[in-house]
Image 1 (tube, rainbow, N blue to C red):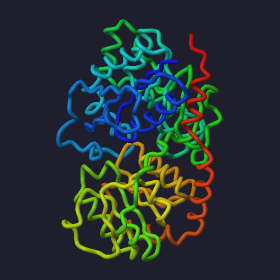
Image 2 (image 1 turned 45 degrees about the vertical axis):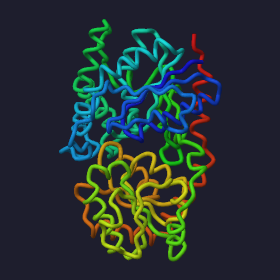
Image 3 (image 1 turned 90 degrees about the vertical axis):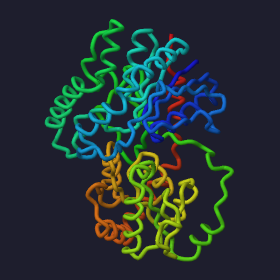
Image 4 (image 1 turned 120 degrees about the vertical axis):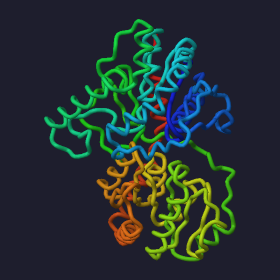
Length: 417
């Protein structure tokens, strides 16, 4: 088949799509991938995208300058936060995204879209092209057994909250995309949950059932495959000798990273991590853009800018992280517990999943956490043999999964006329 994919967001939204695109290409399909990076990244020269046509669908529009998407004045993961995010980072790119969506639907037998790619749904309906939805966070798909607010209130109240939230979201979100539908002569979407976030053809949930169980009321066409991760990304990577020496000369260090969130608050976040590591009395590897020369020297801390998590996490004792899906997956695959300091959006959800699976500590909010709180939680999690054992057990189970292979099989088995 000729297959077009479209995604929108940050690294955590692009790389699962690239992993799937590579898997589809290796299975013999022709693949094109359109992406919209809300922090302005250009992935066109990515070394693993050979043979995959990449389209940067942003219309030359830059992300809002000086705006930190993780500093929106709203509770992380809340309706208000998502509303502001879509207003700032989706609506301005909508026309460019729709142009890419039309191209994908005109040139391919099947399209696969990020759950929020409103423009791909419109193009697929306008041009009669079958569409698959790829969901990166299970909470996007409603279930009466799961609460949209994180507190399970039972099937009746959960369903009521989903209905209310869905009605408000459908009325409030994607205003520019709605205008395109009207322009194209299509009827308005009546439910984002039923029409956009999922697909009657196939919905792929890129998450592992070892962490999040599949609700029993999901439709038969909704499949949880496991995480979609890139293989052999680090085949040529060599550990720096000084890092190897640091790791070997003492107890296994904790690894501290806020991923792409750090770029918006590098100085203060780095200071938080440094002080928490020092107060906890633990050796630490801290991932930051701030250089060694700018920081107080500490023989128990190793500073680095970027490194393959899959190569270093297994050598550490604990991962202090922001709760991104990719970092959460990497920590679990390494068999290591996490402490999540959520900055926004789906990060509180992943932190909660880790905590409920007893492979993580408390879930903190970046805007509220103190050095003392983080240091105490580091000591608490490291002292728990149960948390460490659970993380090791889940990691062993996840290593037997191949999310890309399963997703490719599901897609390849579709009957497309």
